Length: 586
Ligand code: PEP
Ligand code: MG
Image (cartoon, rainbow, N blue to C red; front, side, top):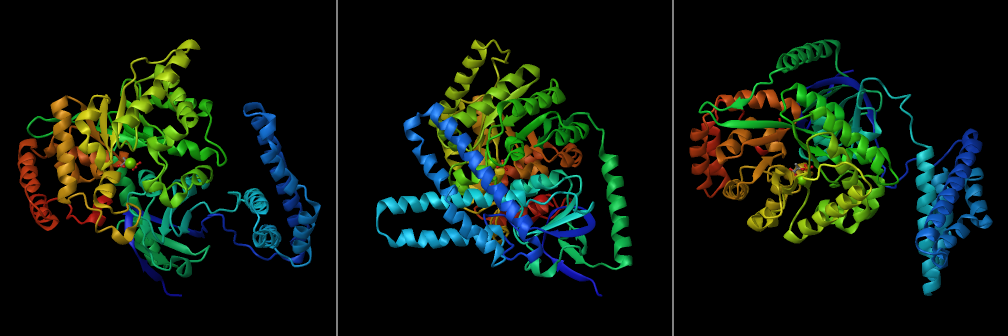
């Protein structure tokens, strides 16, 4: 058989050789419609377990509800319990499994659909309400069924290459990262969270492969070249040998990078501090080993992936933050409070209404509407602050009011803990992410309430240019060199200098040699990046003179078009990689 070659955009460099495993996205859909007669009794058992589980969950919710809100209101849950206990409904579902050999998921949906259409035909608010109760119960049973069906990792290959429509943080958390060697995706932009994490785990990614589901089957041998954006399906022995040689070279190069802990200073003596971005303890370790002077952005979303059904508790979070504080020691670690975007976490998706999340209930907005989730996290962080140099950063701030309200909740948590006699760092610094254009317009006023700024260029570019960071089709618009983006960044650098505020850049641009140089020329002295980028960025910044790059920056800031800016930048940095928007991360 001849090798099939597919191409897309390489979004995380390196080569992987492994076995394909096709993933279907679980967006409430299920994929098995029919079962075989032999499966009938085991599938009936699965149904009964799911029904029992649903009943247990509702009874638990009822007890909690009664304790917190009062007995008289628990009739809402009673209505759900009654539906679950309806013999007639359960019989109909079982019949569909036994007689029509439908999967339980399908049988539940079909049986409910008959009832729902009857309710809908009655134009009476009472029955409309029964209908929505029934829909909620059905979703609960199906989600429990799907969980009982969830694959174990036992059958997964050791050299796993996931082939999926797209990747979310949640999807990554479902698979053992140590087995995950590569990703092949139909869509996904270079700064989506799943891809950022893949990059910091050195997992090669090729995205934007059309018809990927038709071209690759589970079990196919694949070579994924995340540097050039090529995927080989069913490669020959000699192709495998060629790529294995490349992998060995790359490994050698990576090993040679480890260990340089000396400071980063430009040719003309300007000190630049380089930090690592991280989501997990192992990334922190890698970052510190590669010379990070601390953790400039600890994204806390990954911690929430441990539990699909509820926000992770204070205690579990405390453990993670405490070990982070201990890992960094005297060096700073900036932890960002929860900022779900495209993670597809089942619990939060129901709150976020997924598609709107990017312009909806993200970051501080979610925290202010669900203060108990926020306070839980802040309490864990404050408790851990006694063990090291932690700072807090609040994401997605678009007004002064949001900071005031957020800080008030933090102060309440501080008071509670002090009253409980818990030791905390009373002076913990609280900064804000500068990533919404409104925050840049209001920066002087915001500075009065923030101990430091962290510039999130991934979102800043997305919101400034109205170009989604996760849509590869418009990757050409997502360009850090757009004059509006440059002017915004320049304004942040100037205001921060004028107000004497510490400012750090932690978006993906900081990992790129050319952009990192320009940021330094703009005046930024703190850059936080994918840990693996640190040695290369350090080396490059040591070879530039701040004063010279500052002149280049001043020049490009006067240019009105992207084309002119790119022309100057490509000429000035011709020794480095040529720039296009898609190369942002290559
Ligand atoms: C950013 O927006 O640039 C950022 C650092 O945060 P995230 O990518 O997690 O949104
Ligand atoms: Mg952001």
